[in-house]
Image (cartoon, rainbow, N blue to C red; front, top):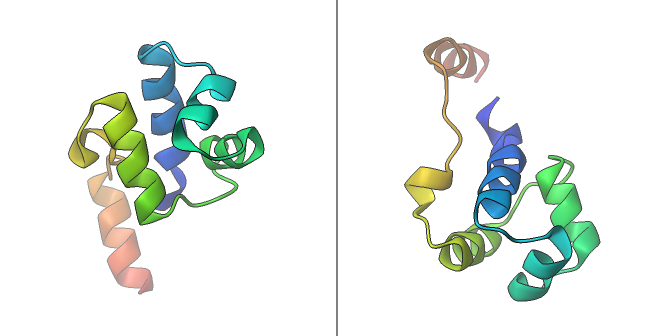
Length: 80
C-alpha cells in the first residue's frame, strides 16, 4: 500500500540530490536511526518530517508522494 512506499521515495530523492544518510539526517535534525527506519518503511514519517524532507530536497509533496496503482485504490476502498 502507498503508506509503505514513502521510505523508498525519500531514499531515492536523497541519493539523487547527493546526500548521504548521515548528512541528510543531520540536515533534518533527526537521528540516522530514525531516517533509516523511515527509509526502510519501519517508521511512518510525520507530516512535519515530510515537510522538512521536501524543503531540504527542494521538491514538492506531490513529487515525493508515492504513486498508488488503480488496483490498490480499489482494494483500499473495499477493505475500509
